[in-house]
Length: 138
Image (tube, rainbow, N blue to C red; front, side):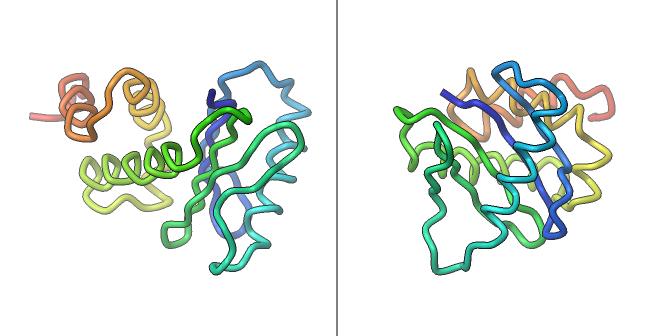
């Protein structure tokens, strides 16, 4: 089960966060700081799966953005690793090469993608549903 989803830049600033379990605001800040430090301190040669406290972190880096997903111990790491990649593919398709600025301005749209993703398996299906809900699309 996914506990949280973070998008973070190389400077360690959280650009998007979504929690699927209740975490108090002050504890979120501390958790995000520790998670970000753990991921940013790793080299490219190290594994993208980290045992962290009572859950696992799965992360991927895309240019200046890190996407980090916190999951429970029973979750399939490779499935989450692929989920992250598919999520980025959808954002790239929708925003025509997603950037950190896009994420900052379109947090609401990213939340729609994450919500839709829980019920859809294909990036194409997610994109079609997101475009159907977007009043700015033609």
